[in-house]
Image (cartoon, rainbow, N blue to C red):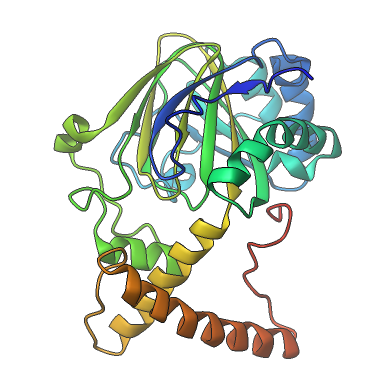
Length: 301
């Protein structure tokens, strides 16, 4: 059996720690610009393309960047002329495309047996492809999923912050993010740079970022193609539930104990929260309302 195309240092891998990885996807035909132009056309029809101009900075609102710094070029113009496009583009949830879902499955299935021994319950699998012009910046933000981010073309500098660093992400910021998908309190400060793990990404080089690890990217002096493979696990679901619970308690005027301070209290709180949110989900389903379910195999597009 061939080795996984994402190479993880199995001796030191910790699902909640940032670490470097290498990979063998640089020459994959689906990750070349010609294939990505075709994918972009298909995803555009489903509104699964996100883009902004090169004017965005580290401190720009990640959520609002497409509106604040619009890229008026088409998908084809941007991807086909990325060197001069002065743009950043993300092809979202590429697992929605049958061809790329097979790629997501192939790569994650290769590493899943090892991941499951350390962090079981892989689900909500997804893929994201980023194509950016020279000098483009991905603003400071965080995401819910664990993330293997792999460089295919060009060079970029990836800054990643420990998700437990409360100088960078406050408890309240995490509560708002998990409960309301809000990044309102995820705000850039220039002094954060000295607290980051910095990856100098080049073809074949990548990084692993745990759930809610804040990050920011500065592209190099050439065009860049990067792919991320993301997923949830049982541990990310537990942590999300605890932060959602603390958000509800804070809304009642209480001052909940921060997540992770007491394992015993977290276990007790988790048991109660699991019942509460299960009942809440069942009620919403009965009323025909949408529900949040990150146990499903793939992230919905």
